[in-house]
Length: 255
Length: 367
Image (cartoon, rainbow over all chains, first blue to last red; front, side):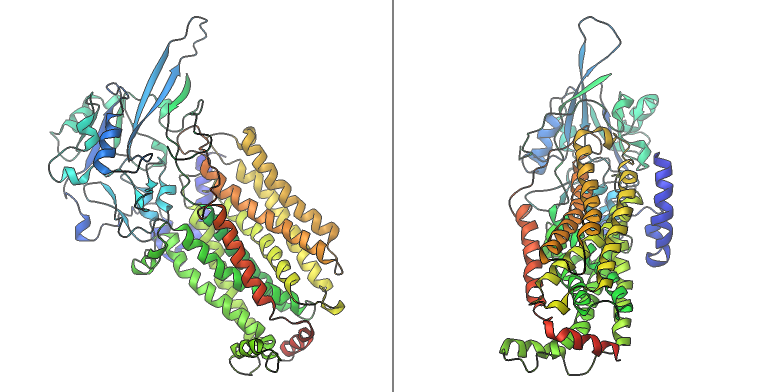
């Protein structure tokens, strides 16, 4: 069954019947829930933060992964950002020695414009600030992991130490002090660029404009409107990887 | 283009086996509520002992289920946040209101139904039973009308639980195997297997059965028809459910093919076993085998559709590895919850003494 048909079927069965019970908000996808009515949840009003990752410049050194881990103290083996690495060969039918290439895919929270993680939170612990940054109030989070399930990008996890939902915050605490996020600061190739989309003269707007034909986001079909934009991305990496899986620790234990 | 993952960290399982336990118990509770109302409607043909077993399944599961649910929160001490920050657009938040209402109504239904049994301990030789007898809160008779009304209200509440538990998971758009109408329907149909299985266990725990305490013919028919209908519907739903995974075909994946086979065989076995072996004069051993098969099928359905589905990556190739830990987030949690249920069932089953069953039947019919 294709995804449109599935969406339609779930809408008529799950959606339509709910309206009288819980109000229109649950049933209609049109309303975007941000949970940011409180004054301390506004962030930097007037801005809209986003990130561009120029894959042509990423060498897969994991400096961003290390920088983030040191800055944000995520437990060992759990990552707010990391660089996934793939080995790619072209099967063009030639019998000669195949040229093997690497493909690097830095991954982090996409700070979606339509964040599915925010809407499901049963206690409004996760919210999206006016500047687009999706945050978790971990003093309120009950760690039901509903948001972890709802994120189509596996960008969230339950932090083993705080036992609450955890994710990339674009280093909001650093941005507020005028600093760059740790991953941007440590990126050796300058592949990661953060900026304000509402500022027409920002570097991020210049990059998006210059490369507008080569900009991709992850899973565009989910309609989440991700705000991490990739330059130089192959479309076979945007939605679901088809290939050979990674070799995991057979016990699935801690890293 | 051939792609091989080289460095891809595995995503950890976010919903723990506690979730399976919750959906197993709460499913059995709402299905027991519906079956109990049905047996009340046909109370001339059904036995008091089966009704008592159903109503106790309802009440005990409605207590144990929510405890398992708080276990699934990594911060169970913050459960009160659900009521401090009401969020009507989240199914889980709605559930936090539906659930205590349902649990409360379930206990009230069981109490009302078993009041005659409680009162019968008034002159018991045992001090414990005489004390327990005081739980009837007076010697007044529960009228049949009141019993039916409360049971019907509990069924309405049970529908809210069936609906919210299904919608809560089906709302997770990021997982196509959940985000489809077949998944809540599969949980709903198989919930009846759990309810019948647990009721049979409680029925077997009732003390000292004599010949007159056997299942009535209508009891057997109810158990058979419920099981067979649920199994057939589930067997129709399984292939529909399994075909809705866009990233790869579950039928072509060896791990999933065996999961689906286990699922289908366990459900089919319920129907076959019940059809072939269940009689009104079946031995306790046969009843126990039926009960265990039904429980296994209900539990396996939840394990595969909730836990195994989480090993399918949303983006990567996968599957992510998972092995059941031995601690409270794994096997200990599962066994602990079953043990709690069993302990409550063993205590509560003492309420239905053999010789009182007839009088309780007539007491309800006469009002």
